Length: 302
Image (tube, rainbow, N blue to C red; front, top):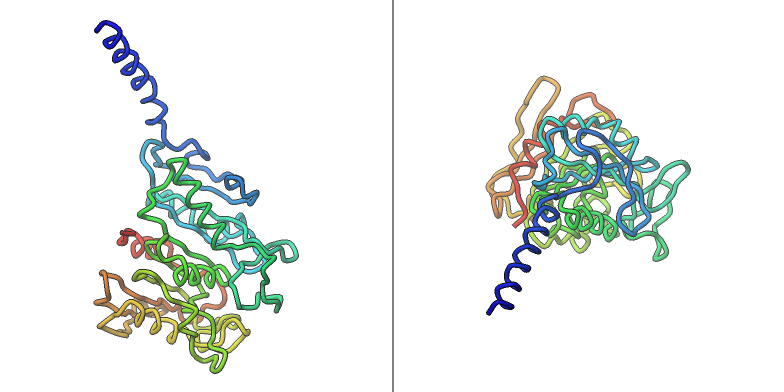
């Protein structure tokens, strides 16, 4: 009996001793600062920003921020000013580098679609969908993020990659917010004015808010442009609305004299699909970060 009691006491002491380590929570990064890290064992770099009010004992929402073609995560974080919004609203930002080197930066691997260099990625190129999944898992394993509140946004090529994640990795994301880069699958080979439905079959309804400028000459909302682009932003919004089985829309309204919104509502699982277009804006970070977060924060992955 005494031996059994001693064993129970030792077990209790062990459990007590283990508790502080379990409660310690996220040990990555620096609160209120941006640091460069290597993602697990991938060897890939990313900028991690923990918001100023981050509690290491409580996992926070995560926004993946994907740079444009030829860019880097560091430059994208600076350009987008998303760290400021993260500090205001309490979400973590991870801005990684893509997997295909291009000049002084990188491009994302969207299978079957040429990059800005004109080359279609091959089997020897980095699998960016797999890498981003590992990045999410790594942050979760380090107890930093709430996996039910993982979101993606990105500029241009990063916006197209964000769209691709919505198509092929919907189970990982609660909502997406492409900036000057909304797509709904690759252009159909026989008619590039429409998306190929076989290339975008999300496993769950996906809330989408997209931002663009009507004077964008690189990824024009009117369609055309490079081989990876072609169909219009309106077509992309309509396709996402069809995928989400939206019953209302499109409803267009002016938000300001320079900004209008196209929205589909009453969609499956409470999702919505919205596009915000800034009149006169070109190929720039056309997003209102606070409005983006207000949309994303409404959704959790179930």
